[in-house]
Image (cartoon, rainbow, N blue to C red):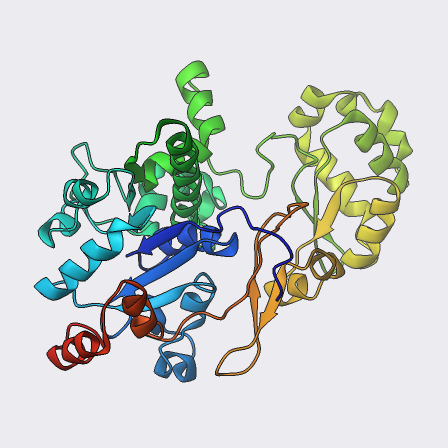
Length: 402
């Protein structure tokens, strides 16, 4: 893909020590927007390269979970336990804009590569640390993965059907939230540095980030004493017409929040009589008689299929959607028109990967290079740092690099 204009983070270099999802998802946002993201991995590559799904891709050290958030990055392998590797990092840090890691607090310090050590070399450095609980507080030293944060944050307590017990979201929600919060935090720090000339420590906690996304539910409790519970598929607005409904042999989700939409729904269902029914005269009455209203809606949609009803209701300006699977939404014309899935050549053939979630008028981001092989750019990156071929050969023999 040809870059027609300068992208937002062209010229920014990031030393990326992150692994799994919360860190790499954040650095991926920068890689898509032009930053030179140097992914520093163990000699065998990061663990997410071997996330179980397809044996063929695991054997290649290129599991889909890894590929999904590592395009446009360059891979440098280093054994950080070795002093030579630590010195290499310090040299690279001299010209870096950002160091980004998601170890437990203290791990990078044990390598001699923590914030204090690296900012002594480069005072303009922005050091982003993503962890479960941040670098302060009683939980700071504890390990955290997505499921743990989903459980602790309250997400699981409000997800699912009441009779089914707490349920986690169907994707690594807290990891991705932490990664995106990290991307925003580093963007803010870069903007601030442009005005002050100073680098800084950026402390991103997955728990904090998730509660920030749960602001509505937290505030409903802190202000009004209301504790959200499991409402199944009911909208956060708790309007009974914003829910999942049985439709023919499947389901449809309605998102009816306005009076005009309710009127259009009843007309489309052929149930204009309900508009004069006192049980459904306003939103409080509809909530009180939610079961009866559900019977009206599902009774009218008993015949037909969800797709036909979606077309009919959409034409009447009634917000709704059938429940689509991942393979169905990937094939949707809207996704194609937006160019969200981008194709890039790789040693294994063409790959379709998810690109940026937004567009810019000038210099919009995109996928230019495939996810890197383990250590694919080691020699090039070390050469850029001023190391010669003799150094590189010696370190390979000593197990400093692979």
